[in-house]
Each structure stands twice: as structure tokens, then as C-alpha cells.
Length: 582
Image (cartoon, rainbow, N blue to C red; front, side):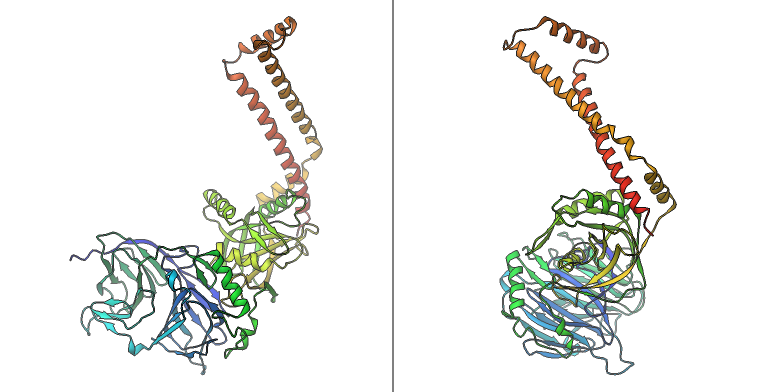
């Protein structure tokens, strides 16, 4: 059979972020750029130093595959399992019905290497999601190698799961996927890996650079997905540097619904809620929920929304007046019974705590004693529209009016992080509309979860410095708005009322004429002559049929003027407040 390579469908470079307890993570699958790639749910390239790691956290409904590249991890769970994962080793954990575990680095000496590896999440078939959890630990020596060009060639394929060049892996619980770690020793080293044409396939570049399927050069930390055509039966991979290393992963889509909330991956909303209830109650796999691993950090496991405020960061959030105006305008137009409003913040971001907020838009939400809801469809629709005008802006976080965080801030914070701002944590800005000054009325935070827990559980809010970024043209606009006299607009509502009365009178005339035609009323010659004169005067200036549309247009234009007048009056009021800022 002729070897025909797949081509690059999409490629992007993963961005470094912080996850767990201070772990550095390059997340590829599971971000805005690639939410999922079924059956694959998440891929993290982690680098964990001493004092960091992934303390106790739950899983249900997936398989996790951890490949250690450097250093050592200690693993333990609430069912009494424990062990070490050394360089080159692979741990396959079928979470299935559920467990709680921890993964922490082992660094006994100062010169011990930082623990580095890859963790892949793979979805389980729905029929297996509530089966018994299982482990399979494979040492580096137990994982076979394939040598496409012989043992002394420049290509080595570690067969973590599946089959490569006649070499089969002993792995059993990888949900049917193929997983290869490929080392290309010399620039120009090339080989072809067979892959079933119906499977989804992706690659992640660990180090060096490659071409795949004749693509452009792909640098380190690149994630690549590939085309899937019947004639394409594999991948052609060529090194562009010495000592290039990458992984290639392929799997058959399961064609099932996927609902993921943090570490719970199931097929129905009610199953997600059941997972939270089971975790809270310590049952169905989450027994011994208070179990402590070798890190006492597990005492920070909470189910109810928890907010912790840490020390202030040195970096900060710069906020443009246009964004503040949108927030205040949203608040002033809210329903009277609504205490506070929330919405999305958009702009640019250089790091976790270096953010420029350029604009904002409202997001409908509701809060009761029992729950908080956010309209995610509205958020996505508004974002799509916004990006057509400002394609370079991204969602950086969310805002809320009010003087402080409340019991639902953690829930909404983690919602925005999951839905919109990954790989970064969402920025949160609070605006106290009763005390609008940057000294005491505007506060900014960056929030993150306490380890890789369910995203609704808890949140650590790190205060960051908030500054007003006023450019020269924005200052001129604010000055102009502040100087705009609002009393000159008072006649506009009266004009609208007069136009509305005129419209009502025209409707009455039309009704009278129709009644005369239908014989319902006796015609009046005086009224008839007056109407005829008016129509003749207009007919000499307009084509037949145009009059109604012209009148309707003028009425609508006047209503639009009224709306804009109200808006300008609001802007003037807000501008007066903004002039007090800083």
C-alpha cells in the first residue's frame, strides 16, 4: 500500500500558565484554541519544582496517562494505592467511577531535576464510566521501542500504547488510543507512522522542531491536528534539528456526548451533579474524602464555594475609560430589583497579572440563595460579534458592580476561566458604583482554584493593582462629555411625544377614510376637501406609495434621536463621575 501522509489541519503554540499548587503547565488540548479533540480531552506539559505539584483532587469518567520525562513523581490515592513514577515511566490511571489522588514531585537533593512530563486525558466510553478504577504502571524498561531504520538508525519510537512498525505495547487501559514518543536524533531524520484513516490524530513537539506531512517548520510546544481523509493512512515526520522529540497520539472518536466540569467527564448534566454529590458525601469512589496524602495541603479540599484573598501582586490591570463607561452604563440600565450586574472584560494580556482592559459588555445573570446562573450562549454570541470589530482582543476576565466579593464570586470566576480565558486565570474587576474612585471604588483580582479541583469548588483571589489608562483622545472625549449641557436635551422627549400624537392622528384619519369607503359612516364634504388638498400638496412632491414609508422613517428617526439623547445624558452623568477618578 502506498504511504500517503496526513496534512496539518491546525497548529498553535501552547502558552505557559500556572496550575495545581504552583506547577508550570503548557496546556494544549483543553484551551480556547482546542477545547477537545475527541476522544482526547486535555494534554498538559508540566514542569514542577520543589514545593509545587498536584495535591489531592478527584477524577471521574476518564483515563489519565502520565509520561515522565525528567525527575520523579510520588503518587497516592484514597484507595490505598501509592508509588513512584521515574523518568521514562508511564502511569495509566482509569479513573472510571471515581477516586481522589495526588501527584507530587520528589526532590530530595538541591540538584535534583525539576519534575517534567506529559499528562493526557482520554474519554472513556459511556458504558465504562462507572466501572471500577484501575491502574497500570509501566517502567521505561517495560515499554518497547520500534526502530524504523534499524537499532542504529536515527529514529526511535517508544510504543506507549498501540502498535508501531510491528512492535506492540503491553498497555491495556488507554481507551483504545495509540500513543508514541518519537526521538529523532539527527536533522533530516524521517519516517512514516501508519495510523487508521478514520482516527483523530494530533502531535505535540516536546523539543527541537519538525515538519509533518510537508508542513512548515513546527517549533517546541506546538500542538498540531491533522486532516482525516480515506486515502491518508499515516504521518510522515522529518526532524528539522538534532535531538528532536515529540509525541504522536491517535484515537477513534467515540461519537458520544461529552460534558466536562473540571476533573469530571460524563455524558449527562445529571451525572455531573451526581459526581459533585458523591464527592461531597464521600461515596461511590470518593470514600475517605478527608484522606491526607504525604502533603497536608489536602486539608484545603472544599465543596462549598470558598473565597480566599492572598497578598497583592506587583503587576497590575490597566483599565481604559471606555470599559468603565460600559460597566457603569450597564449598571444604570439594570432592572431596579437587580442589586448588581456582571459582564465580560476584553483587551490584551502579557502574563497572568499584566492585563490591559479595553472594553466590556454585559452578560445576563441571576443570583438567588440557592444558585447563580450565567447566560453562556449570550456571552459567546456577544464575543463573536465583538471579534468581528476587534479581532485582536480576547476575553481577559469579568466585572461585577459592588464593593466586595460575594459568595458566588468563586463560581463565576471559575466559569469565566473555563469558558473564556484559559490558559490564563480570569481577571476580576469590582466597581463600587456608590463610591467611584480608584483609591477605594475599583479593585482588581486574579483568581485561581486551589489545585486541580472541580472548578466550582473554591477560588484564591490575588489582588492586583488597578490603574486608569487614559490616552489623549480619550481624555478629550471625557472632557467634552463633562462639558455637555444636559438641559438642552429636555425638549427631545416632548418632540417624540408630539410625533407619537401625530402618528395616532394619521391612524385615525386612515380609519375614517376606510369607514367611509365601507359605508360605515356618512362622508363629510368639508373633511373630504381638506384631505384632498393635503394629499394633492404631497403628491406633487412624492411618488405614490412613498409617503407612508417617509412618515414612518421620520418617526423612527425621532425615536432614535430620543434614545441617543438619553444615552448622551447618561454619558454626561458618567463622565462627571469619571472625572473624579485618579
